Length: 558
Image (cartoon, rainbow, N blue to C red; front, side):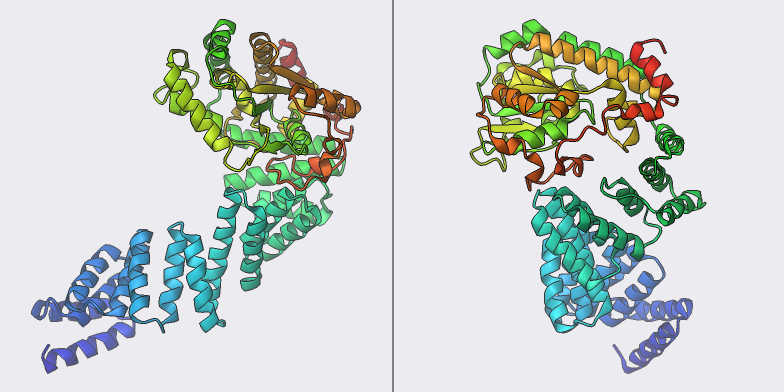
């Protein structure tokens, strides 16, 4: 580049720095018309395009700059910014990594690299890089924030990998770096609740709300915590957020459920029910559930998994006796049943998992369940069984029994019986009114769209009970029906029968299930940390007037 062009570039950059972007753009274009491959001009034009919201154009100029000067760290960094703005995070991380390699003194490069890795789903790598950078520049606020975000994401990934104790350390580190990190406080609370540390969970939820007063999730979790009774201040805060015009639909749903729990703990039952109903109406707005369609599906399940077909499959399949399926309607006592069994030294409690549903999709990928499952070959069944067991046994060690406690697997019990003729089934049942009220109180998503009206809830309960009766008839000797009220009122006797059914010797630890330190990932996490109690039996009577449509639906008169 000539001396004259160099001076013109310097003048253009000064105009650029002053914020006169259109004027600077014109000057850069003039220079590039004469020196189209100049590294410095292309780099600056790329930076200007980023600042103007044109990252695709920026990337073209920056790549041109790097062809002329491959070791230009600033151009690599700018290219990373352009990729980040295009939401192409893996490519952004690669560009930032090259910039950091060329100039490892630039903390900004390290910080951006860590953030791009985090946004690419590589939180562990991000933490390693950012922790190293923080040791060099501990007072850099942007760097500390990026590290806090990465530590929180790494903690969340460890929760998904069922490593909650490790996750806690990362959430605490995130909070140390960024004390007002509301999401890290929230995630710490959820993890502590799963671990049974309920006082710590409450402190974390409070800290999340303090850091972010409009954090609907934190308000919901605090109100939902069984050991917590919402204060009037907390109730007022949730009401204000619910009324606030800018509060989104999902947050309004959480706040309405939270207020339902809060009012119930204050024994203000009509208000509690009104908030529960409000939450369900918000959810129902986007629900396509149809009870007629559900009825036809249940009929198809019983037809495909007939007693004759299941008897034939039992004679051919692998006799693995480890799996114990604990199924039933949500809130029917499935978590309690698993906590009892998992307190036995020979039992590994897997918790709720979608492994069985995934095995069904693997066996019949082109049709929605239960379509196509009546035409499976023995090889296909064995492949699905192998896939299911591989997932179920991942962390089980040498356990004699493995529990799968996904309530809605009552739909899949026939499929499970075909895959695993040695498997056992524990069907959890509960007083229908109490069960349905408990469902109605909870914020359930996914396959639980039947919960949003009392009429549908009652009708679905009847369908579920009819299907359980079918399984009991079609799987003789393989089903144990566990009535929640019996387990509460005759605990030792019922626990003994349950263990006998599972082929396990009696163990006193199963009576002290609440002392177990195992992780519980369900809405009942707090309840199973306590000895059995009967206060939830007959709870529906508090709402007897409001529940008339449910009672009619359960009777089949709605």
